[in-house]
Image 1 (cartoon, helix red, strand yellow):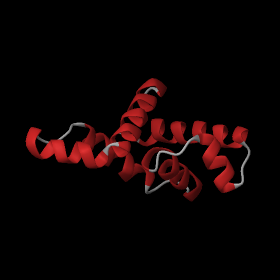
Image 2 (tube, one colour):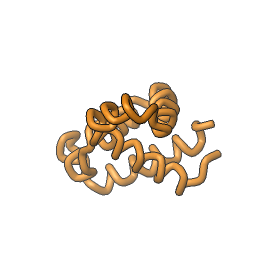
Image 3 (tube, one colour):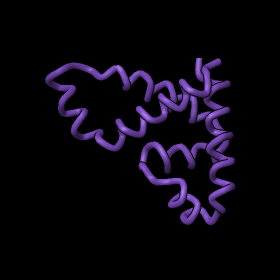
Amino acid sequence: MLSPECVRKDLRDIRYYYSRKAELDSAAKELGALPVLRTVERYNCVIRKAPIILYDLYACLYIHGKTQEAVAIELGYTPQYVRKLVNRLNTYFQKNIT
């Protein structure tokens, strides 16, 4: 089981990767494959088996780079409920990433 700190670090790296995907993929053609791609694939593989609400949250926050506040408005949730979902998402990854 991954530690909460490890999951948070991985998710920060994933969010950063997707925010600069075009530039990083271009650089990787000259420099070689990025190690973060293995992390991205592991998390993407695990999230496919998650409940739909966690899948949607992951896509909104980490792939599309939205803030928790923006997600709350978009989905019609309170910011407190989104924070609760983020905690559920982190726990889901802790238990399911091998």
